[in-house]
Image (cartoon, rainbow, N blue to C red; front, side):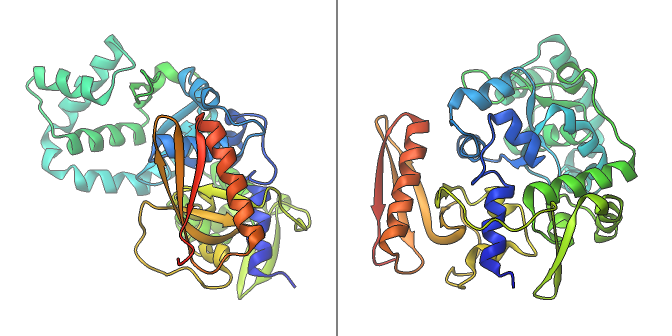
Length: 356
């Protein structure tokens, strides 16, 4: 009989944490979308799923437009492959857009003029930072607060007008979507529902229909339509009164490496809602309001909270266990810290709070 732990371990393979891809582009294409609210830490979410994590890997894919960082699926940032950006926006925008429209209500009578202004500025000079755009808008008499500009640009991304440009000294920039993705891939709605069901359950499975509905801001009815259309390429099983969908094949028997240090927004956590807590089969993690603190996983179980602190020469991982850790689990966390520090080009330090 399959257990919660088996499902969580299976997800390490589906999500490439135990079966890494060759490069960042392949990771993003495989996972379809990777939450990217925090650029620095979300870059590790991609890199740790590659065979040889390098900072210039994702950076290069973003620079040449193979991967975009945009608001899509939900009203937050994600990395998506350029081939998937258009159809994902068209599929999910109807339920995401109202979030932006509501928050931008005070600017409702200015939105058309602001949209025209941003498009004109990016057509004339692409790859502008948010600060560049704020200054240029102010020069035109269209001054906005930082929050208002962020929401405006998010809305334009969901509309498929704007997307990420070439980063400047590591800072996010904006460009016209049509310039970055001149030949977008488009799907009709039924094909898009089938595509998202197939690729989500392949890359995040085993998972439930409600997990996908949350992840992509879709109705359960639409998710079921997608599952029905893709069911010949997926496989289900029943567990704890729910149907879990996944790519055909048996559950993996083990997962290596055992330890992972991840942001709390990582797809292993944020990629689910209905069955999120498969990573806490023992029920040891306090169910409290989310924080920005990261997490330490060992054998796909969330055993500790983690906070990352950078200095010029070192990275310190402050680890606060949710229960007493065994020696093997501590060693797995130390191994994960070493991998993460090597990617950052720093010395690894682990500060383990043995008292929790």
